[in-house]
Length: 160
Image (cartoon, rainbow, N blue to C red; front, top):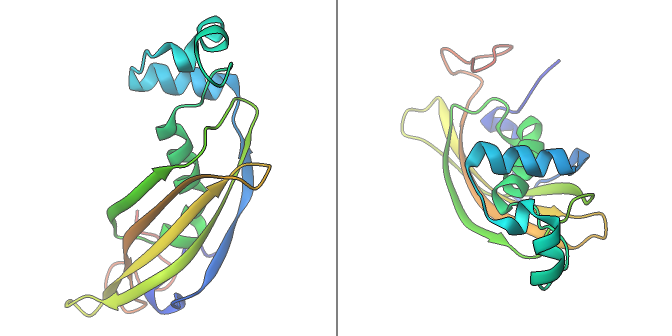
């Protein structure tokens, strides 16, 4: 089964609806806060969040939301990537709460061949939404993707 796409398989204006969605659990939020050493009580202290914040509940860490959304896009966008080159215009537009389900979609904005001739740069905009259809996260990403004639990543070979 193929995973990811070659440069030739991307078209400007192409849309991807990434599947499946991912429901964020309390464990996800707690472990991510611990792994990243983020000790803000907004993410870990239910009493604090309930009594001292505008949302009256814990908020999922923005980098966790971004990580899940970008992860959902890998099979469609960067599964064959040589490298992720850039993430630009990252916006956290609405808070995500424990129990919310994230969904993602991407649109190809631009593509251009690199000077090496065996790869190209694909620029996509990815939008993460919650189960209510509200945009919670968006960003633009540039990915270096092999062409089918790439000497080490040719037909049928994964980049690892």
